[in-house]
Amino acid sequence: MDAPLSTPAAEYAVQLRGAWLRLGREVILRGVDLDIAAGEGVTLLGENGAGKTTLLRLLASSLRLTRGEGRVHGYDLRDSRSVRDHVHLMPVEGGTYPDLTAAENLDFALQMHRLSGDTGAALRRVGLEKAAERRVRFLSAGMRKRLNLARLSLLARPLTLVDEPFANLDAAGRHLALEVLAEVTGRGQTLLLAAHEPDLAAQVTGRALHLSAGSLTDSP
Ligand SMILES: Nc1ncnc2c1ncn2[C@@H]1O[C@H](COP(=O)(O)OP(=O)(O)OP(=O)(O)O)[C@@H](O)[C@H]1O
Image 1 (cartoon, rainbow, N blue to C red):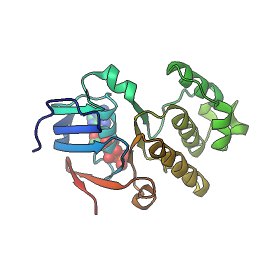
Image 2: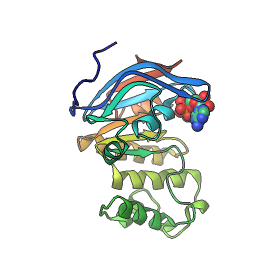
Image 3: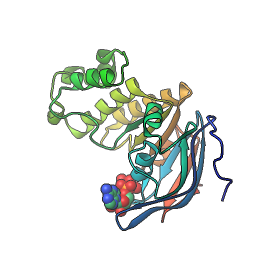
């Protein structure tokens, strides 16, 4: 195991040492060590149920480590407020309010984060301009993914976590997802994405990791 994390190291977006995470009776992480440099793009691969979403939620400070330690941009994962200030998680589904329209969702997200941005342009970019006034509950799965991509383009943080960016998207949508993700690393932000499409993901990340049986290994 690597040396413990004695001092904050902001040049790393993610550091885990001896990370164990149990959910119910299941052990999802078994002593994981991980370093992701600030500005790096990394893909997380693994079978259904391997724990990719769980690891992203841990790094977004939505779940607690059972044992071990972790930092995001030098902030201890237990310091949820600081971690959340540095992280945006685009979930595989959800993340928006079903009874608000697409446009209202983006406006509300900006307000919540005290940010400004052109929500109309963001909706046009993802091809949702005609659906701007439709409630999210009436959008298709691919349209909701496009809305989440628009949200991501407005809210990306120093560490941007993206769960299955290509799921439910048509060919043009997958191309759009690649564009939005490339912008994240192009701005020098760190990108960690969980995906089942290694070839697509390799277009926007320089390294892939494989999560299996609670362990992370480099993916060939
Ligand atoms: N809240 C929870 N309580 C208990 N177990 C959970 C909880 N959430 C997820 N799990 C379990 O944790 C394991 C990992 O789930 P996770 O969603 O992280 O996998 P994944 O790698 O993202 O899978 P997929 O590729 O299917 O999206 C699964 O066995 C799942 O049943």
